[in-house]
Length: 190
Image (cartoon, rainbow, N blue to C red; front, side, top):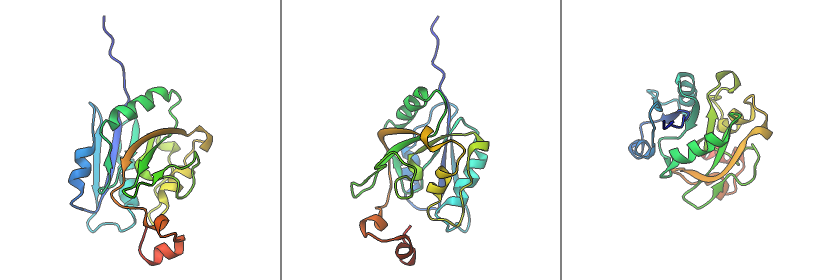
């Protein structure tokens, strides 16, 4: 008798400000049976880099894993299979970090470290174990780093994958302009 392979489901959390690019983002999300796509849009938008929307999506998520993608980003074609392959190899259910590539060509992660500027939410694939997750801090521009830095899994348990999983819809202006946090904030750059 043929036995089908059991796969784990993914909740795709999409914080949105209502940008036109949301259609392209949603079209890029490949789902398998049991997966869910949670588009969270507050009216008016929270204006906190989508952190309140990410937290609401995290709280509502029902699947085995969480993935985050903003409404101006897109996934690479075939990303769901890439994610499943990573999950199948991740027998201990540790957080997984893929790579992402900005329009400028810059690729993150650079090194296998959870540090500010080296990671971003579109590269996360995290087991949906609520007691292990840190909250998305609403007033922080580096909330993706804080979320990963403070979750309950030790940093050494993070699974680092070489595959590029997502393309952010914006360039990394702060990095390209060589601005520090205070300079970027003053110019309204996240």
